Image 1 (cartoon, rainbow, N blue to C red):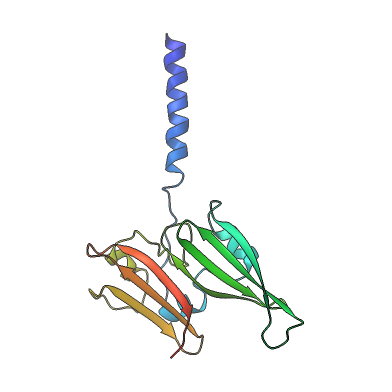
Image 2 (image 1 turned 90 degrees about the vertical axis):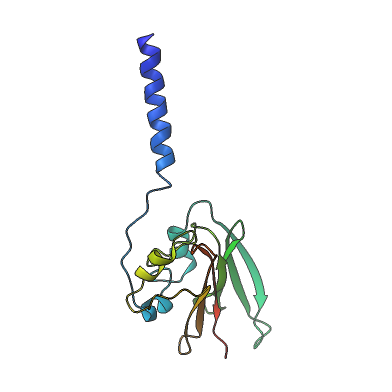
Length: 170
């Protein structure tokens, strides 16, 4: 009887530790808006670095696109996706990779300062050094020089529901 009890205890501890593994998050440091817009996912925006950074549940799809300036050249669009979330990386025929856009609705795509959907409004504003607290439903961060725009959408309870980002166009 003792052996069975001991075995059940060990098995339950293993499963308990396994389930906590997904809940432990890194404590990210607040960043400036400009730094966030320059490198929202970290230092590099290459497919290889994003693959390492994103959760193992995130899948990758590759799409071919003809270059509109030279039809003989082929560019590639990489789509990282998980459920309703997706992040696109554009790779030119001369191997330059750049973050193109996306929609994030879950925590499988962590941003540089720890911002993920599901976090509270207070925690969101604490993730930035130079962003003033407000109660708006959506917060827009953009930089004309970088041609990048992020929109953070909150629900009525103050929970971040969606992050939408794309090239900035006037």
